[in-house]
Image (cartoon, rainbow, N blue to C red; front, side, top):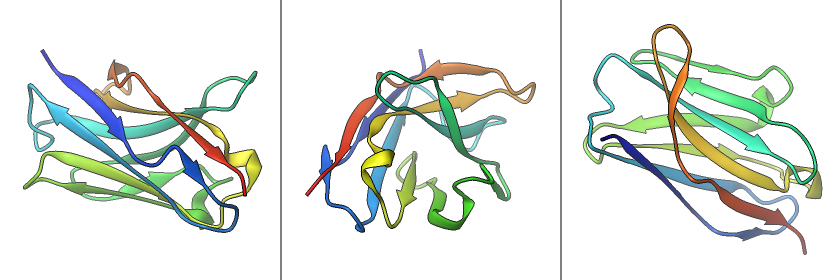
Amino acid sequence: QVQLQESGPGLVKPSQTLSLTCTVSGGSITTNYYWSWIRQPPGKGLEWIAIAYSVGTYYSPSLKSRTSISRDASKNLFTLQLSSVTPEDTAVYYCARVTTAYAMDYWGKGTLVTVSS
């Protein structure tokens, strides 16, 4: 059974960089799947952030200038960095596994990140 677990600071100050880790267990991130980050601001819908392929990445156009996703195969995890955060970046952040048909079949439980001074 594949499991994903998000981790990172729950509070980030404005203008700083938000850094999150998604640790994958029960399966290797080097298999034929993609890996993605999604967020949900309070009272709003889900917003897709980024995806990491075996070779290459792709970002939401609205967040691309501030976002970086990467994989660490040696540790079986992938990460998210979002720079120059503002209170509008406050959200529950989720990581997910993505099939080659672009279905997100496994999700982490999510982690709340609050941007506040």
